[in-house]
Amino acid sequence: MQNDHLNSQVDIDALPFSQACENNKQPILDILQNELQGFTHVLEIGSGTGQHSVYFAPRLPEIQWQTSDVTSNHRHIAAWYHAYPAPNLYLPLAFDLAYDSVPINSHLESSCSNNPYDAIFTANTLHIISWALVERLFALVGESLPVGGKLLIYGPFNDHGNYTSAGNQRFDMSLRQRDPKSGIRHKEDVVILANIHHLTLSETYAMPANNQLLVFQKD
Ligand SMILES: C[S@@+](CC[C@H](N)C(=O)[O-])C[C@H]1O[C@@H](n2cnc3c(N)ncnc32)[C@H](O)[C@@H]1O
Image (cartoon, rainbow, N blue to C red; front, side, top):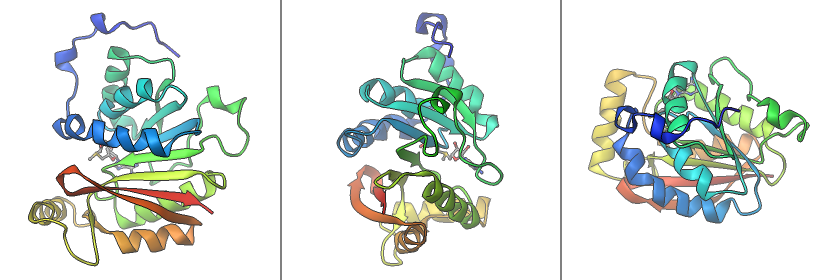
């Protein structure tokens, strides 16, 4: 693992930037610090710009934080990693939900056998990927997590068939115009799908900007 890149060598202003990540990183961290007590290995699916990972890893020092995404995003995640390296943060693994199985970093292979991660985190992905890939995500996570393991999902969800805000309704329409297979998911559908894969909803946190953080635990 290359941790020898100092942030003084990186042009911070040139990093890919998500304002939403800046806004939601502390509220998400507050939940993770509570929900991930005693957990040791987290896989992040769809790490995006990588902003979340560099904020979370140093503030969750007991956790090995493994980023992942489709390879086209790896340079963004790596740029943030090199700007803000942390000893418990790992460069992204290739993970395309359409094709791949849960990726394992070689640093984990020696210490873990079947279940390398005891928790999996993903933010703002379920409304981007198709429902078929949401189904695949839950199948892979259900197979991969050990009993007691957690899946934590941040993003917008509909409740009881309704948008939770006018802003989410507009967002959903813009998503579907761009890609008809994308769109804000109904929380009830997600919970049913999770149950099929032995994942039970244990907590629902209301988050700023009409988002939610859902926590599922493996039975
Ligand atoms: C809206 S971005 C969210 C990024 C970041 N988690 C955040 O909260 O800002 C959606 C993410 O889903 C990822 N993604 C899209 N299709 C995917 C796929 N087939 N497999 C894995 N990740 C995918 C994208 O690469 C991107 O990182």
